Amino acid sequence: MSEITYQGLDIGLLDGGEDLVGLILEATDDGTTIQDDDVLVVSSKVVSLAEERMVALERVPVSPRAERIADVTGIDPREVELILRESTVLGAIPVADIASDRLEASAADQTERPGQTGRTTPVSPPVILSEKSLKIIHRTYRRSTGTPVIVFPTR
Image 1 (cartoon, rainbow, N blue to C red):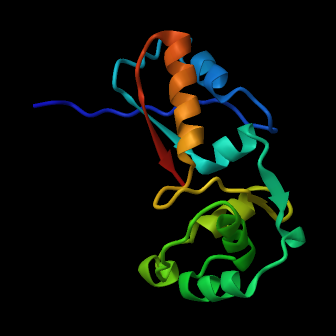
Image 2: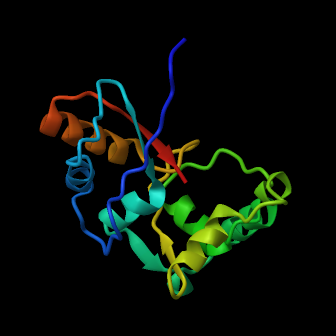
């Protein structure tokens, strides 16, 4: 039987513009090994910070389409507007109904930082990060270490 283990990497707090793969490499200098075909799970927030893709939510004008989608999904209409700008939305489901017993991730993101800031989330449905961002992380890591990894996005 195969064993599945996981380990978090402490890359510290990001200010914006950091070299994400460099931080991952530094975090594994303590002897943590990442082997061929291991999975690196990266959050959209960390990638957005590293790519300096943050905007002030109060400055985001909301379209009628974003309002309609926000009504269905329970997501902040300003965040929906950012998603619409960078993706092709094929449909929307009522997230608030599905996760009514938990804090919605977008609300949690807003409470983690002072002020109202949001990601210019590079979305390529159905995942949160763009394929381009994931490929850059994958290629840069492999080029730096020679180790092929799977880069998996999470919100």
